[in-house]
Image (cartoon, rainbow, N blue to C red; front, side, top):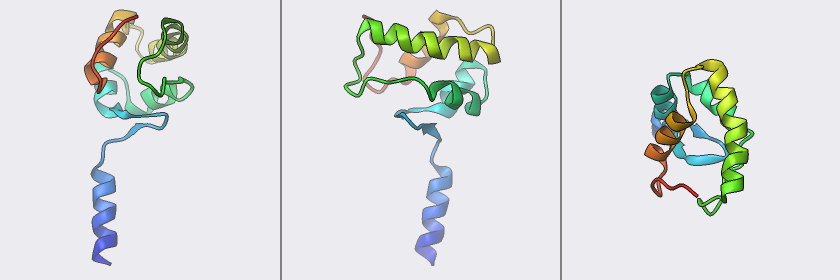
Length: 98
């Protein structure tokens, strides 16, 4: 029983992450963008991250065309440059542009 309670506590303390990109801390990304975490997760859901972590320029633009307008509905002050800066900040493999 103690193990079950410990597992529940650890699970609750783990930061939420986007289902299709579990490497990014959605709570901190959302805070940096000035939106709610649930909004970020919902906007990120239709994005298709590259499994190799290095998407082509075309794939980056396609994903941005989905993500940015959705985020801007919640916070019109989010710019392309701001989104890039925040996402790069939390990208485990570091910033990159193609």
